[in-house]
Image 1: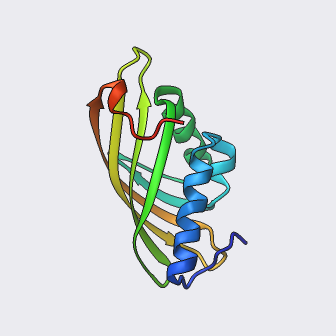
Image 2 (image 1 turned 60 degrees about the vertical axis):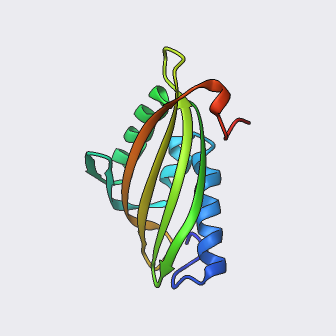
Length: 136
């Protein structure tokens, strides 16, 4: 079980979003992957994959490329076992260029509170270091 459990209220949906933000900011693929069902289905940008092992592999690649990653999520809407969020995160590449990535996610949860589906649309915008909003 991974509380809060569906069906979501505004309070439990906000708690679920905050828990996701906190976990992703650890940049620990093993920890983050535990929030998803073994057969979770993902679309991230133009990548489609299924399963916790594929999620771990994806996150390892992501955080090897997106250095000093820092994320903020915001509840957009919720109903039953679904939550939608908007997010932005900042990171720099190996050449030191900073980026802000904006997007939306749709989440669907199993009865045990694990996410069984994640759909993410994301756009990247180059920024100057002085434009960072999510610095630690």
